[in-house]
Amino acid sequence: ENTYSLRPGLQHRFKSSTVKECIHAILKEKLANVQYIPEEMPELTKSLSETIKDRLKEEGFDRYKMVVQVVIGEQRGEGVNMAARCFWDADTDSCAHDVFMNDSLFCVVAAFGCFYY
Image 1: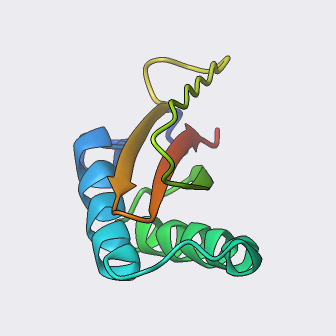
Image 2: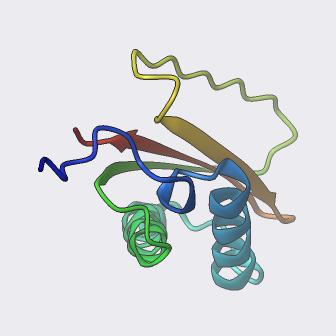
């Protein structure tokens, strides 16, 4: 009998709401009192993306490839537009995003979950 599943079970599907809550909690914890210092931002973006990716792995999204994108910019009252497009399986793959702002910086995080067949 073949037991290899081609689709994730309901309990293992990428849940955008759960992912957004994880992202929001991490950003609130890590960025609440951070000031924008340009020299420190490359390391901070890398650290945030690793932390978020590791936390999402703990959520039990078995056989999902995770892509986490973090953008941090200085809060200067200017507008920023971002967009992403994906070619994927709409039944199994999804994404979530969240935005954090304080007086000094803004941070946009997008997490993409792609089911690995």
